[in-house]
Length: 86
Image 1 (tube, rainbow, N blue to C red):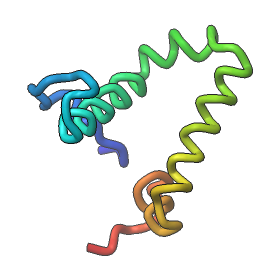
Image 2 (image 1 turned 120 degrees about the vertical axis):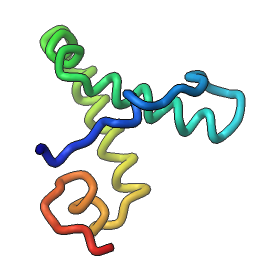
Image 3 (image 1 turned 135 degrees about the horizontal axis):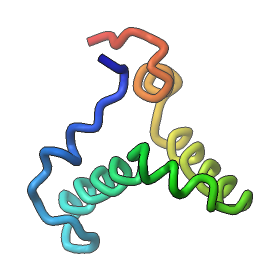
């Protein structure tokens, strides 16, 4: 089995939309990001995206991770290169 999981998008049955409340926003952003990361969708998008769009998306993702993840969380949760200490 791979290191990555995308179960939320398969199991979530609630509202997908933004602006109603924080909980719905959190679920919706998880849903959107997991849908966006789908291999078939990314295959269609990546060759069509401009260099500036690729750079802008990468910059945003990196900025968010730097802002909200510790160094250990970055390695454990994103890079998946450390064992989780739970």
